[in-house]
Length: 373
Ligand SMILES: *Cc1c(COP(=O)(O)O)cnc(C)c1O
Image (tube, rainbow, N blue to C red; front, side):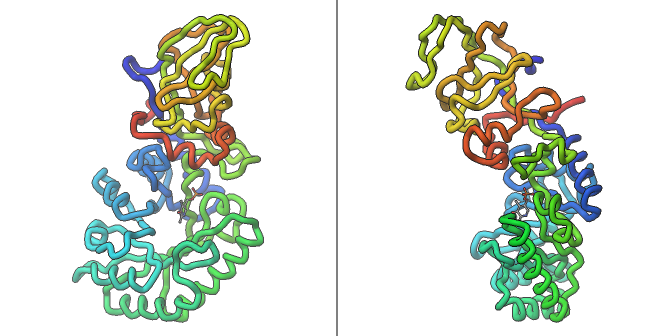
């Protein structure tokens, strides 16, 4: 395999895999899927990821902030879309105008959302409750008063409470069950306040798979729709998922060197025999973690090699031995193991981090290209 002529590096995004992964979650959970496309669709491209997820039957999209949501609207995405973390004092006018639903974590946000409503257009809200993660969300002691105010604003047509939600810590099934109990208490308080949120949602990828009682009306799936597993001991294939991103580059230089040749900054690697070194034009500026120096796996021509020496800002070296490698050959860092690629998880393990961080940090210098088939 070679890259398109003139392409040095690219992330190939299989939007059909994203659609299939959404279908897999709909089948597995039996509830609606809210596809999480924050952080530029976990590095896959937000609009492209959103389109793939909607093709697979996602009923709603989730992002973190209003700017991300507006970018999706500009990209032509008109599906229901929610944003849940807001700049202090942000005015929600543009969000309401663009039909963006708002996650609301306190009374001030509720009032600002109501102020952004226009005559015929109430602000559409998902009330976020705190169930133990210690981030944002309306705490139990404030729920009675905030919910009462939301119900009043709903009666006068300023807001419409579409949903109520929270987020789990995934610490242990018991910790998550404690959070579920707190969520149920919040739902009871909401009902007693006269609210009838249609979309109750709590689970992200991990709980959606492993904790059926966390599924309610919808699950918010991020990592899983990109075909990655939240479990270190379960592969995507075991979960019926296909990784959607392949990160690859064209070998930029090849050199034959004698034994004892130092490689890359600091010579942390030295050749132990006459060998061939191949230069891969991806570095930590592109999101390849420098912590994976000497360890991160690369597939070149059906063989897997570790990085030799340090990963630099723009490039790293692979010692391919006597394997025949030429300039322009493909080097795959990660993708779908079905086609012989390492997993993003392999790089995460090499760098001491998680697969989420590996894919979301792939930098803007790496062009994203939608896979053609
Ligand atoms: C990021 C995020 C998700 C998605 O989490 P995954 O583990 O990637 O599925 C869901 N809900 C909230 C509130 C999030 O911030």
